[in-house]
Image (cartoon, rainbow, N blue to C red; front, top):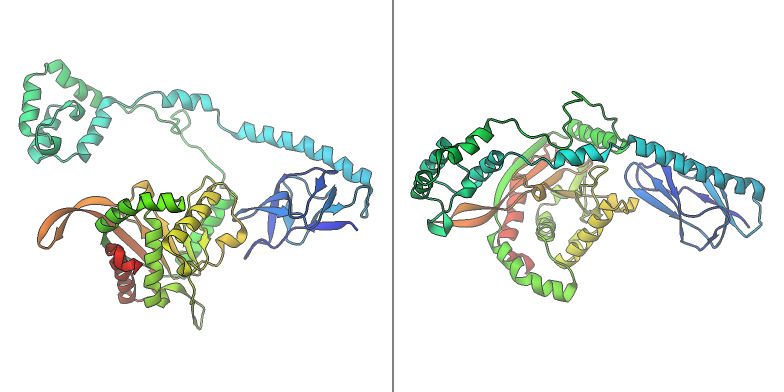
Length: 435
């Protein structure tokens, strides 16, 4: 008997989706659990599988149609079987679908910006002085050396340092000046007076550009505004010495890769430490209603992933039960599938605490926005080498700044600070964290 293929429930608050792609055509044989159609939802792309073996008799919704949860979108049955409509009529719909998809593809191609102008702009290199200025700001130079380089408009990349660890000394600069013609010394200064070269994405011929908001971006905007309206945000900051963890990770990674086939980043360690700290400060892992606090005795750990269509937060379910290696494997799998738009709706639901990593892009601090209905979010940032006092001595250490935003309706400052300090203590003593 022919069966209707219905739009399944696709997660919390998801009531509809858009037909993005049919994987089969009318008349094609189908196996149970074989993906039949891909739906775009507000959150993720969903592949809907067949409920039984058979043949696709009819397609009831074409690419681009918005379909509600529970709506019939196709009919599956035996060859030649009918289900309220003739086989001829269902077959007639297939060519219509084929005609529409190329037309839609052409429209999308027209919307895409022409790549040639961008390529031409990208080929123009920035002035040498610009890169020299950037390099100068990042180098360890004494004030007198830095001033001398700027006064003479020198390209720091041309200087050879003879000091400790190749550091450029004042004598190095003076020697270079005395042995370099004035025309060469002034070349960089002349370049600094020139305007910056054109860059891709910045078209001066078009003073303004209006770009329609995508549906995903609209939803992200609504969620961010809602969170700020509901929760009085407060952010606490703390510094963490990652030096021992950096050394520990470097030491164990070859063995972990050989035995488990995965390379550990710092995120699984941070996730593991967060789960341990939550056990001591359970209100961090809770939510609020108008008249009660809901404390969760399980940890579904969300972590933000950037993708082309917008930020998404996959959730590692029951993260408190996982080892560091298991966390690493779960986070890599979810992260990869998030970027490939292959997450299931259930994999982005039910988070109780979130970690967001701005450090992967070089940020040293941030004030993240809480994901409702959670009450805290942990901001992770870049690890930088900094002078640090250890046993009354200044040493070069690997330091990260954490920034944790919390909902002040429920979480007091003292409680938040103690939680973050506990998490940091675990990171700073990795062997003890694992014990």
